[in-house]
Image (cartoon, rainbow, N blue to C red; front, side):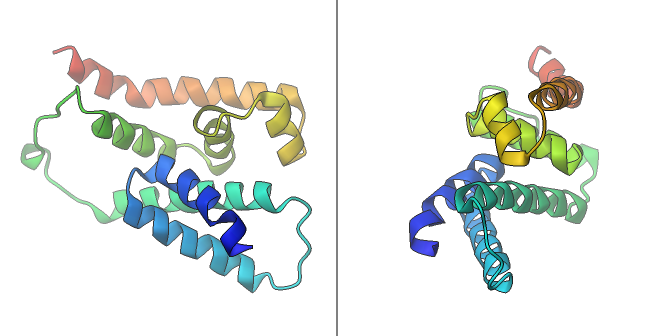
Length: 153
């Protein structure tokens, strides 16, 4: 299973963390969790692994945020044309979401799944997926507002 799905887990984690080392740590965490589950049958291995990678990557971002305490005066001025900075800002904003909305947003916009596909994966209605996506986008828009306003200064 590791050989078959390592690339999927790594790519999913990398899209969220933006860092290869963190993505590799997430991959190890995901497969270790899977190994500990031992003989539990998985209906859809790929779906489980993708969701586990998303959640573990968000955990990495959240822990990174709680470990950092930097005085605001010590922060460098942002370079708003740097896509890595935008990725980091999005990662931080995603980490502010509750787990389910963060997972659904990631599946929808970073992994490219449709609302019906996500609903089937998670066993929820398409309407609920649409509502969660809408609310997540609203919250992310609010979280990223400070980033966007700094770029227009």
